Structure formats: C-alpha cells, structure tokens
Image (cartoon, rainbow, N blue to C red):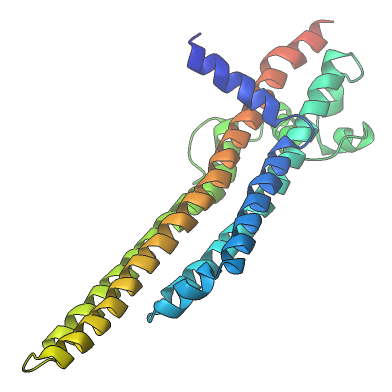
Length: 252
C-alpha cells in the first residue's frame, strides 16, 4: 500500500466520525461568510457590483448561493449515512447485532436500525435484487454508488457553468470597451479622455466578472471535493461490512 493510498484511507475513516463532513461544510461556509462580511465592510462588493455594467456578478453570486445550498443538502445526507454506517459497523464488530438483522427491510426495522444506504444495499444484496435497468454497471454496489455520484457530477458541471458565465461577462466587457472606440470619430484631447473612461468601464466589467466566477468556482469546488471523499468513505465502510464484518458474524 502506497503512502498516498494509506493517507486517503485514513482521511476517509475520519470523514465517517461524528458528522465531520457536515462540520467541514460549516467551517468552510463560515469562512466564506466571514470573508464576505469583511469585503462588504471594506466596500469591495459595492465597487464590484457598481463597476459591472452587465450585472453578471449578481448572477454569479446567486449561482454560488444555490450551489452552497446544494452542497449543504448533500453534506447533511452523506453525513447521516456515514454516521449510520459507522454505528452499524461498530455494532457488528462488538457482537451487538447479527447478520439476520440485515436480511430485509422488515428485519432492519425490527432491529432498531435506521434505514439508509448501507442497510438498503445489504437487504437488496441478500434478497438477490438486481440493479434497475439503465443505472450502469452489473454490480449492485456500483448501481447504488452511481445513483449517489450523479448529484456530485452535477456539482462539477455547475462549477464549470459558473466559469463559462464569467467568461461570458469577460466577452461583454471587451465588447463594451471596443464599442466605445468604434463609435468615436475625430480624436482630440476631450474625446480621448471620454473614450478612455468608457474603455475603463468595459475593462472593469470584464475583470470583475472573471474574478467573481473564479472565486465562486474555487469556493464551491472545496465542498464538492469533500462530498466526493465522503462518498468514497461510505463505499469503503459498506465494502468492509459486506466482505469482512458480515462473514465474520456468520462464522461466529
């Protein structure tokens, strides 16, 4: 096992402890909110919005808020699933739960377990259910993982869309800048000063929209990366329960 693989395994194990995934979301979002308050207090937001004639910066701020809400929803869900999987693994290790408790949904409820990703997967595995057509992959766990991974793939598409919206603002800014030159006839000192002022407006629009899209994309990529690692941790615990803990309980 390489050092990088061992480090990833330790990181995945940490994500499953005490809702750490959700806690990391709160920490990163809290830092973003703190930075936003400082930027507002220093007048940076006001300068950015005022200089952006295309108003694309406001669109990017709204897109970031929507993305942050999506990451919170997914972090809450995965954090609960990781916590439930960890509790199930601990119960199997300590002999507090037997393999028959995971036979089907009724047995899961009777054992006092909260239905979730792991319990549903194990119940379907024991009853011999196959993945639904079109979910991809012949293995049941692959089908379950694909179902969860789709939301994360939307996140990376969403970040790419934000960057393209910022690039659109860059093009709008350059169009505003060049149009001021195209509409100018004879150049004298007064006209040249007016042209430079209009060009600065277009350039500020291009730069601020690019800056807003890059910052928003970077800030959103952090929680989506953590979500990907959280899903890996959940799959790792599921495989451990399936291949190690359940066979050990059957042989006990």
